[in-house]
Amino acid sequence: MPARQGAFRPPPPPPMAVRPDIRVAFIFAPDFTVLPFAGFIDALRHAADEADWSRQIYCRWSCVGPSTAPVRSSCGIEVRPWELFADPADFDYVVVIGGLMSGFHRIPGETFEYLRLADARGVPLVGLCTGSFALAEAGLMDGRRCAVHARHLQDLIDLYPLVIPVSDEIYVLEDDRITCPGGTAAIDLAVELLIRHCGKARALKGLAQMVVDQHREAHHKARRMFDDVKACGDWRVKRAIDLMQEKLAEPYSIERLAARVGTSVRQLERSFAQHARLTPAAAWRGLRLDHARWRLLNTTRTITQIADECGFADSSHFTRCFKDSFGEPPHAYRQRRHRVDLS
Image (cartoon, rainbow, N blue to C red; front, side, top):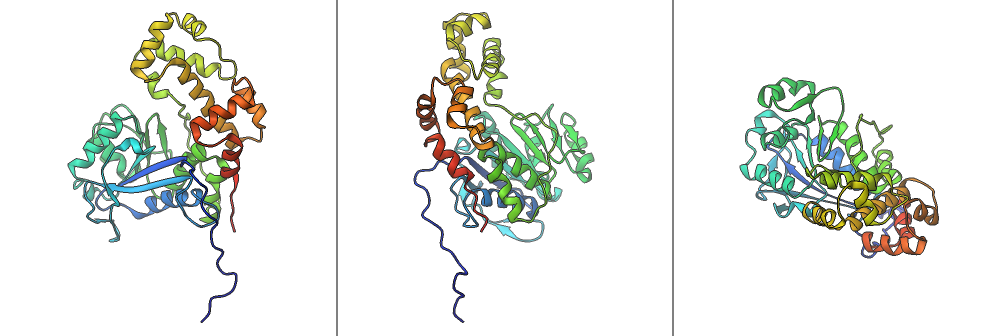
């Protein structure tokens, strides 16, 4: 039977040299639950490309593990990791998909080592379903709030008394630890992360495709750039970043910044080199560019207005800095991310 004319429209050529806005690694625990994984990755898939072509353009992901042997889910479906554990710094998030407690006890030791390495590299960790138990077992959840399903609440309390259980929120974002009890809440969490990285229009595109009515939010304080650096213990760095975040639209000299912090320029630069591996000026510029990127994705302000509101001398200077950081000029960046084809 011949194919109906017009039933398939081939995709256009992919844009050249577009950097992905978000990169995610998935790790599967034995007996993992399929639903949270499917919901999370499908939200990524829809946001990653135009229409339903599903190419990894604006979002990229990979399934990783200590071996490429298939991992059996709680329903019997098996998933084979695509690649072995490598440098976790290649990703923006490492996501552990948990499931039945019977499988949790069979997680290989290499997985916990990889999670600790990701933590050491500053990569945010995500626990879906009982994936949060894997983070706790690796010693990475002590003193932190953790979203947990009511069914597993007592298990978490018994096994990890230093972890703070949260059973009345559908996900918890706390610095570089993100937890979700699973089910369809994984879709809401994925959309929350996509809003941060890809903008609201592209993030919500997946909901329409998956016939999900709305994005449910959890009470949280959004993580900002360099929040992890602020926690380094050096009062100079913390105070300087606080001032930078207050003065995104009105940056001034590093000499004045050091004076307001209460230190010398030389000592401030030494502190930033040690804890941020950046100069104070580069950190401040990074904060302003990150805020400008958010405005491009989530407001209708013009390029000139955004340049002015984020402390750049003019739109030409802003465009040069933005292209150096994100690989394309702000107008093209906004246009690509806002082009959402639902056909």
